[in-house]
Length: 557
Image (cartoon, rainbow, N blue to C red; front, top):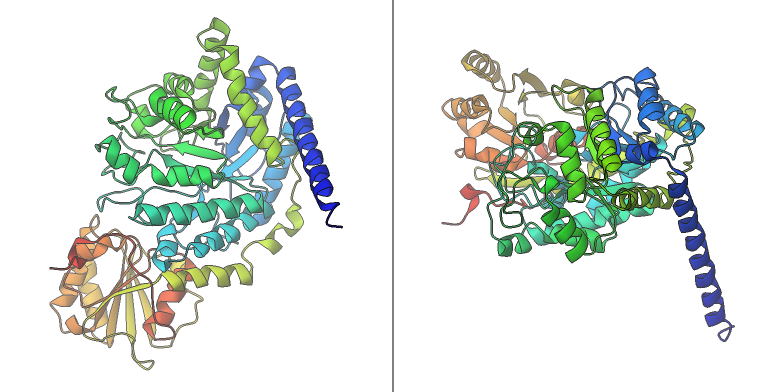
């Protein structure tokens, strides 16, 4: 048997190589048979409105030959597991019936605050919750939970994970979407998530290249700048993307950020920089997967460029997939001028057929690799049996508990006595999250506006007088000054030594109320996180998470 083993291995390798060669030949043949319009269409992943395969989406498939769609709750695309599965099945069948490749069905399902699928689904806590646990396996567990549910409803591509290093407390858009403020941790956690998605057969997309973690502006609104030297970028921002490539990530999403150390042309975002996408990512790093743009309808692009020219410039820079998402003030049809501009550019010779074929071939190869060319379709009738399951919810709770961090307890207020009465004040409350959780009778919730004014604070103080302890759940308190005012008012009241702050977003909220004596950081407000917070308050488990970002008030003197 031992003598035959090498021959057996050789046979397996030969068969595997032969299978790969046949698949690649099929992809090449597919490319050869496509019309110019079909090739142009493959470059576009776009949003649409409605819960089913309506006239709008049919027209995009029939007339524009789109390569993919991106689902949004705000566009009415997601209502229930059964509905989503039927939508994806109908869209795929329609594309296949017209002789086109299967569609990329993509979504932003990062977990935590960025999750389009909620009703009927188990949503893991944020990346930063996993990062606070210190255990990269929990990043893999979050990806496992997510991938299983995406496959159940026919979603084959997830715009996750974010491998940005959140090193800027003022960052308005990344925050808890980052695993950590430490580069090495982001590398480890991001790679584990990518490996898990790949094993599950869902296409992960590492974002936002070359890094969006140290910005003070939201690229949905304007163009941020990363002002650092190349040496600093090589030390902090870029390594997680190199780690993602080593982990086998098949696609990377660009950031609409200006990076002068990599692209000296003023006002040119990374998405439109040949130096960054082709010379660095493709040529220097050798990345052979898909380069996907962030949405071309975001303010960082549209405040300076028209959609058509921006898309053309991104393609010239090296992008393969041009994403048009449901950004405020934009319609699904906004991608059409860009589609037509690229078609004209190829016809005029401004873009060579060789350049177009290179991107389309990469797209087809990824579709073939992940079974998207001729996809296996889910059964809408049973899709809900594989989403939001008790085991998935239990796994999400495990992550929430592991990441929960007790950052301050100077007066030993926590855990609370089981018999104590507790009022939880929640600005910007997500009321469905706490209606059905198992909680002691003495714990009551009171919802407040996201930025409570003096009248709301007065009502909260009046209600709090009959309780032993007040818990304030904060979220972006530095941007919503009323939350800090509420905590200050409580600190100046008889409840000063009986107030607990729980930050549901970044732990930088402490900067708005540095005087609090009891402080928990949950990094997330998904149901699992609320349950973990409740159990921790009453001592059902001891939080052992470690804050993964640097907070000025926690620095040693």
